Image 1 (cartoon, rainbow, N blue to C red):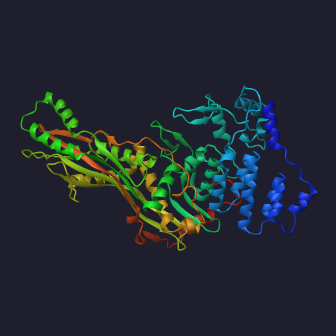
Image 2 (cartoon, one colour; image 1 turned 135 degrees about the vertical axis):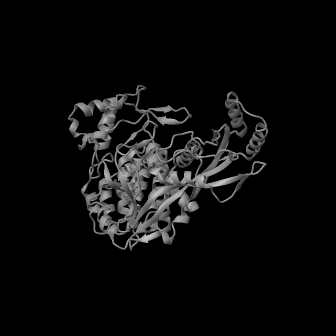
Image 3 (spheres, rainbow, N blue to C red; image 1 turned 60 degrees about the vertical axis):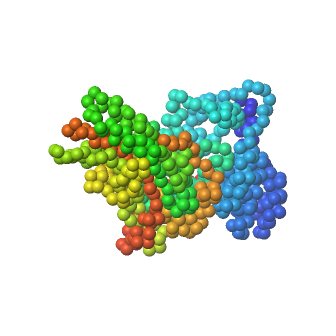
Length: 576
């Protein structure tokens, strides 16, 4: 208890401001020397007042940077973060935060004794028994914080800060039901059109990371947006904005984070950063492939030739199929344009693999999407087709991007995703030869999958997740092509290609079990294998011809006045 009281005292007791200090702060011609003198004396309130009177944005940024450093050195962590937030120049703020990372994340030493009190439970007790409505968790002005201490080593050998877990779920229930509004509504509230300022989000994420704090779920889930409809720039406020429907999220049976009402996966901050960096570096070109190995295809050709020389009884069928699978072996997974250990890469591979399983009849499709094998028909007396190597892949499928005369609002139109097809020739040595052509049957499967994509995405959320990735890719490409970052005065110093933000790294899948199946028609085996992947080249779509001017002014009328709300708090980065 004594240590907590000591902390509270340090937080709430401010240095007395003398009359001389006030005179300096209110002087008509403030100088940097006066400002530095205030910092040296630890007189932060008048220093803040002095910084607000700076004659230029550059001088004001310098003052706030020095103030943040002084506050961090004095242990005033939240005050230092607030000062860094006030630095308007992205690059200067980033450089300042890099220098603040050590003092902001430093932990005070032991004040005596070896027993560490349980402050989480103590704070819980205080805030639930002593005037509960007055604490900040329930919207009141009161604040309380623990003396931060205690670490643990995780399974990877990384030192982490220890935190108590409320296994009853009571605290999480309070958090989700009574979060502070601050003029910026809770992300759990459904909204037909939520706006996220990417530059403000970048600033708030960097402030948290520099202070050694975890990102909140709203940041990780981009305020619950589950579909991007618009990309906007507002030079007057410096905001580059994405907008779309949003609401509360939950974990579905597969472990995906989805919108509570629509069950569509929410956008992910990590995915957005990955595709934005790809847009800067590779112009929106990336993808993956799942393909059989050439030597295994050659071995399979030989196996089929030899086994076809003798008849096959029904009881031998299972063994024959297993031998065929073993001969074909696994298929290789390749990812290009994005990091193979990113969630974007995982989404590409998972969606592609699942699509091929539907095509081979290994997973159930939806109404209107039968498997490729089930559509094969063989006339009496005809021989079944030879082993097919089909190629199916995902690609962009937008119809257009609408924009205003000022090219400051962009509307994404179209379903986003399509499946394309090709029949490949298989040489004797196992080489796959591209034909650039697709049979009617192969093309029909791809067409059906594209036509019923929404129904498939409803049944299998991985396809909605792929659509989210495509939407963010197109949004990133629009930002690049139209120079929206420059127009919005957004330096992208943390999310950009040179930025220090690090998306979560996942295990890399390099191979997958072979994707093939067979069907017996009139005692004849029909075998099909499949390759393909995901191919994204947004530059092929985002041409001047596909950017249409909204001649009726609907975008201006519907959106322009609703983008930046009045009196948006300094720390806010999204709004309805």
